[in-house]
Image (cartoon, rainbow, N blue to C red):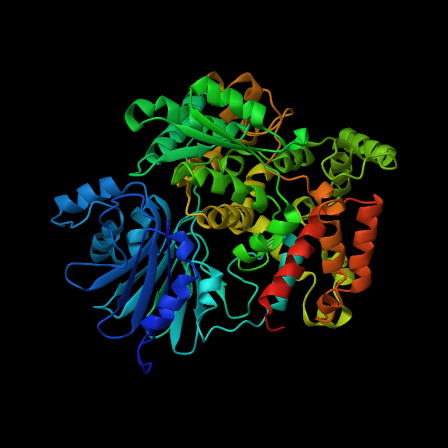
Length: 631
């Protein structure tokens, strides 16, 4: 893993790219690459790049930015190309000569052969910028699922780029004025969906996209979409197909010239990853596993993870998360650059920090839910689609009966029944929006000041969400929901969370379930192979039944969360109250003080559970205070 930053002057622009500016920008991402650094200024003065490297493969070689032997191409690359050996053999057979042993140089030779089409040959996670001096053209590219980030800003005479937002903002030409529509997006989802950012002039290159710049910056071009594939008709053959695809993906992720381990929860996906790693250990060495747990049993998965570690004889480390949330809050908020309201960023960062003391690379189970239908909301989508009129009436009646007595906690089963029943009368896209949103359009209208609301379309985020859902070409609601999450929740929330939290401590995370062939396979399976009355990921659970311990096979899905409700009522009580009722916050004219006070009163009195809403607002308020953007 690495971090880079720089600028590219459009053809005809006056002046030269500034290496000092690129260097200053890249210092903001030095944590992504503590092992090496480098700079590049093209001979024509149009492109300057600064780079920081985390050495994982070819430790002594592969210095970056890397320039081809003829001096015509230079690349700065963040990520891992898992098929680089196969590509290298193919290129050598065609006459290419290599000076290094890693994956970076493969990009240079591929570009000479295929130009911008090289991205289609790559299997892995990556974000890179490649300058073609012969053509006077810059190429930006990002991997298919969006595992590695790439930010950019188009200025009148140049394109500025960086691995993280704080680096981009160090460029003197990049403004800090807020995008008010993006604030509405954040309040709706808890993150700012790409390609937007919280700043008007800053963009994120979308997953599976490339961008070319020469006389100007072209629009992002999509080079890949998940495609349905043929699925065996027989059940045994389907199970074998799933097992073979996942096993191949994990094994392809195991090569590293540094210590490698796995982040092991008590869940299905990471347990499968560890089992495959352990079975391959005869070829790759021992397996180290790391688990984060809480003293609160409802959030603690240490027992199941411990059983898996014992089953496979891993070198296991447990970390009990006892964070002082008031002390780490601002550090986590600053880490993400723009407002990021996923509270599990806190334990993710802490477990990454602990793992980094032992390993440089760790495999994770991220992507299994999206690929194989693991979320409860997928099961809810399927039930809603297939529900008979009698069942519909019964569920609505049951929800009405339990509503007065249901606990207010969001995680309670009765509260989840009520949410499911309340969404039933709506069309599928609106139902899924209700499962995912923080604030709906009407609630946004009450949360925002009248002056701010007049400048934005408070219904815009909902329409964007519905549009993503409805444009997918799928035959069942589970696949529609999966595709929606692959478009936004995965790249804009989950993968942002893990990339920033891990790279803050110089740890590389690899997610085999995000192999694009595994994702396409999962989408292609019929809904009944993914969800049933007992839960999700049915075929995945059966395909690997023989390697799973009972605690995992029979356990319920928990997710990697934090006791947020308790935090807000106890450890963070004063911080939340003082931050969200600060006159300085309300002087910005974005949030209505009475609306925020109402949420606080409901939550602290127990009349409602607004944990995730209040956390998102708290993060936004702290971010505003420390970043001081231009309204």
